Image 1 (tube, rainbow, N blue to C red):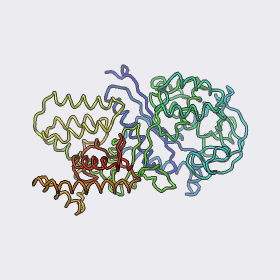
Image 2 (image 1 turned 180 degrees about the vertical axis):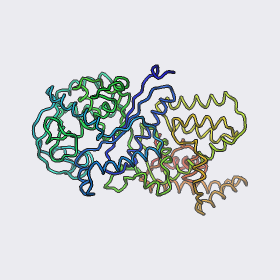
Image 3 (image 1 turned 30 degrees about the vertical axis):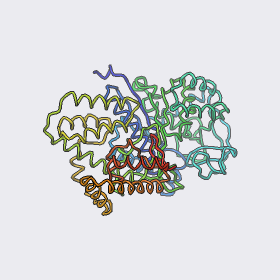
Image 4 (image 1 turned 120 degrees about the horizontal axis):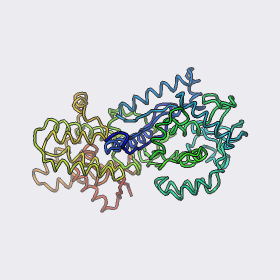
Length: 531
């Protein structure tokens, strides 16, 4: 199929703030977007997958001053690390935008001037409580316990001259658009939240310039002002395509975006601020803004104050590869919550090793496999992915092939095709295995495995019951140590169960069944909870 004939698909992640290294929540969003982009390419779409960094603002300026370097030197250092991370995770983005890129700077200045000239931006002054990490102004009544309602951190009283965007001018138009386009904000619960909590109560005009710092894009007609984050950052989705430049070919080809994939915490900016800016510019709105489920850590929200905001470096220190974390992200549907624990991450690392071993065995296999069987596997995989990117179910099909007792290069080739969506670099499995080290299981676990094996061979069902009861206690201990939740249920792939609890899926299901009867746990699609 010629490129000109292909249907286009434009997907974006948020552009991340490079004050420091990215945390695993940022990474989760990018993994989900990568899988969607890969699938669309596999099925014949002309894909544009955009990610990048939002590099201006007071916080970065302060960090740079503390390090005695320029803000640009600081962001250059962090961005280089982010690009290395995406390379290690095999992220297939098509364009990486930086808000310090010259073309973006020039386009933002043009956009700001256009909005000012048409009366959508005006000069006034602002007095309120300012949260530097969030780069947000708040009124006293909006604060929660005197702190930022978004991040819970301290705020500073601030007063300064600023330019404001007339948000209220477009509020009714946006409400009508959202009501007329029910798929615009997904999931629907988030749509209702935006309308009822923000739009219907009335929108305040939005501060879009600052004078208290100078690390930003200068306003061309009033250079003591720099463009504030909203216009600077949100417009990246169109400037990356050439909007505001002499070459708008990509903009005309890919805009409007098919999906803005974002975390819940920035939903308001993408479903209220951004659409209103586009309306003011007389441009089409993105087809869909999707706020994916939270990444939980140990069953709760990731928070710097709790000390559980992990970066990939910390995972690597514990022997968890970036690609293993990518595989971990596939254990939950991107619409649902994903609970991170080091135990599950370590289990996923071991599962990745098993996946590589299984692939290599098939690669070296010589058996012939019926073409129809191959086709059935392929169809099941594609149908599963096409069903709203159900990655856990897709991985179930992958494991079926890996476990197939008939070792064949035909299966290896099929797994490589699937890996065009997964991006787990299966092609280099042998290299990874050669580099990896064997880790001995703890002696008590080895003993339990041997006991179980012996019980099966001798048909000693009393011992089998004993092992099941021991496993029940292990499950309860795990739940208590992880805030009463684990991302495992009776549908979890056998490999992950084996690596975490060192038992078979049958024994695990028996133990879960026993605990259910005792009304000690309950299961749902996300995992298992203590009652």
